[in-house]
Amino acid sequence: MDKNNRPKICLCMTGKTIEDDLRVLDQYRSVVDCVELRADCLDPSERFFIRDFPEKAGLPCILTIRRLKDGGKFEDGEGVRLVLIARALSFPKPDARANYAYVDLEDDFRAPVVEEACRTFGTRIIRSRHYLDGMPDSLDAAYEELTFEEDEIPRLTVNPQNSEDFIRFLEWCLQKPKCDQLLIASGAYGIASRILSWRLGSLWTYASPLRGGMEAAAPGHIDPFDLINIYNFDLVDNDTIIYTLMGQNSIAQSLSPYLHNSAFRKMDKNALLIPTPVDSCIDGLKMLEILGGKGAAITVPFKQDILPYLSFHSTDVQLIGACNTLVWRDSGWAGYNTDADGFERSLLEFLGKQDISGCKATIIGAGGAAKSVALSLFRMGARGLVLNRTYSIARDLARKYNFLYGHLDDRAIDLILEHSDLIVQATSVGMENEGDPISFYEFKGSEAVFDLIYYPVKTLFLKRAEAAGCRTMNGFKMLCYQAAGQYKLWMGEPPPQIYSQLEQPEQL
Ligand code: ATR
View 1 (cartoon, rainbow, N blue to C red):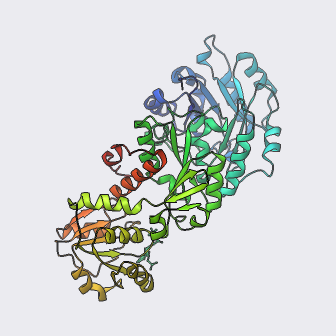
View 2 (view 1 turned 30 degrees about the vertical axis):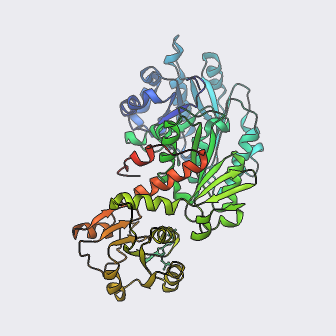
View 3 (view 1 turned 180 degrees about the vertical axis):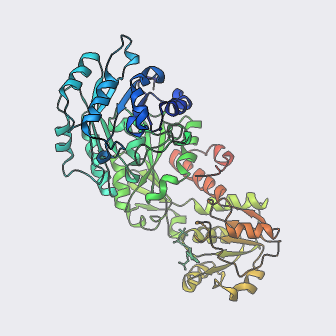
């Protein structure tokens, strides 16, 4: 896509001073297309200087003075706001770049003098309406009410409260004829509208300089560098094939988009993986269908729920009882599981071995992740012990592979000692940076210790093992290798090296 056609980014400045805004803007200048001065965020004394902002910014500028009730910080009355807006648009200069290119006026803000001045001097009006707490009953009606004048740019912001809301919004956007407009779904459920603004027919996506230390101008804003580095914003176009990451609300923090989109970029694939937080598998599949998606990465809590919707179950899906990858085939959604292979590859790399048959290993946990670990260890000929808080679940898993099983407490100490070549932590304990599922066990220092958790980078369990002299490994490489398996399934070709080369970012 040439630069003029590629999706555009509008950077929202929320600094307290113009100087702050300009300083941060400088860090982003090369990657954004226009800039919104959120004058409501400025200290009141700074508001006298907003007239000169466009000239100093050197990019097309939007003036916005957002009221509290619309999600902004402006607390004074409408009279004051009118004066500020009029002042900012006054004394237009012959060089249009020194004037505001746009002004954002809410649909209940009527000021003929300002509107006429805008038209005369070439400042386009963005006519906005904000549903901060949900969705309008009729998106059509809300949109129609917004578009008073042909030359205005309608801007509709909604706040989906669930995935059903977002699907309604998405479907509505996609069936609308394209024109100059801004259609935005804020909050966690709306993340795809920020990433796919170009496909939804929006002129640009609003983004905040989060990495520059500024607060998000609205819930759900993404940093422009993340739009580019994680979501390939500089590469995507209308032919881009979408893959989704189907999971809960928290998946916006997942590393999967970064991994896959880096690989797509590297291999020149016109493909993009986007997070789609959904409340059910049905909504996740609906979203895929609406976006014409060709595959998905499935994560907690849908790995089992998705099974009834599959037209094909791979052997690993059948053995593990969970699916982490969807691929669109003629007959429907084919389900695969790349977790066991991902674990195997990362474990062998960690141990520096090709063969671990006879290895005596303890698996802590018996949930979805532990099931993949158990299958993988079984295939490699290890002799396993499964320990779980819920004893019966440990028993059911262990029996499948002829492993031993036990309670997750000090009754298991002797069993662990007998299965201590390798200890794999596969529960969710430690994710919140607290808890150690085998605090009752004293490491000898000779165990190889693997925690499937990758954030925090080192759990308390892993730190304790390391302090005792054990070799340790977290789950990042497993994440990378299960993702590499997904790439292979989606693209039908070997995954690029990048999946084994990426370093774990310190923070999400
Ligand atoms: P995942 O797909 O991430 O494995 P899961 O299938 O819900 O998630 O499994 C979570 C695992 O963490 C289970 O083994 C669970 O033990 P139970 O089967 O007894 O629920 C374990 N787990 C979760 N919280 C735990 C806790 N506080 N103490 C010990 N084990 C815990």
